[in-house]
Length: 414
Image (cartoon, rainbow, N blue to C red; front, top):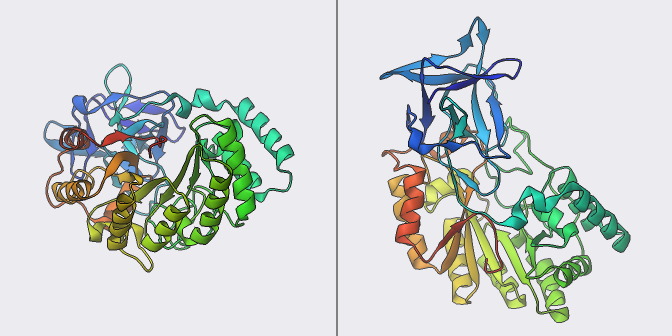
């Protein structure tokens, strides 16, 4: 396995004289067994201002110049259904800006093809690019604009579906699977990797714009009913990447859920949430919410707070929300923001195991955390003990918690 680097013209080459490296919290020579062929739909990414790290036997080499020209390290962003297991190893040069919000995975050349530190963790046809053909999405948008000519919600979803390529927004127009209904412009967390609203001094550009208009309950109900009437086993889903925290809009969502359930009993009503407000979640459960997906990066309070930077709540409130949802028999899944060197830290694993044993969690959705690895480690710290590795972590999770599904996609059960 040889390191890859990118020239200024964007061409990617390998360094056959060196062994590739990877970072799982500790930078070390790459092991071929930890890599798979780069999946179709992946993106190779240049890491500007970052030199390549390779190994010549036990000696570490840092390559920032090749043939007299500056070169950069390379990583990959994975398609849906894959989970990153290794980070790119690099040395940041002086003056380098933070990396854009991607989930950077280690890459290497095996002599035949580009390989990546990743694992296949889910597969579902409705989440494939083939199921989201642009012409079908465009036709669906046109049909919905005719059906809902004055709907600001439909206009927002059309933006998300086309400009940002959001599958859950596209599903609204395809009338299939999980359909996004964004409602909340406000948030009570300041996540380091927030894709819709970064701090002004972060030096990181938001990947998309956050919703600014709040839809009415009637608007939500009409869009939701149209989706559930057309989509077999359909899901309507609050709490999307383009919005803040939906529990801050709990009264509105509760009115909408009651309106949906007065008209139909079919389908799943789902929320993606930071679970920061247990009483608000209980209000939604009373209204008829059936499925909850709780986002977190860690089951340890300090690590959680370092990433989410919560305002007015703590991990204890998140845990209380898990208790509330579990006591109501609600389907619970976790949106686990995974990161090599943190998720697979033995101390983290102990805390996470305690959480899984305490609450009736049906699924762990492994989500590659989209953030500059150096920025994340600066916030939460590198591991104090050698991590077991993300592949070993996935095996541990499957072995120790066989009743918990591992995957990437929300299904009707949560």
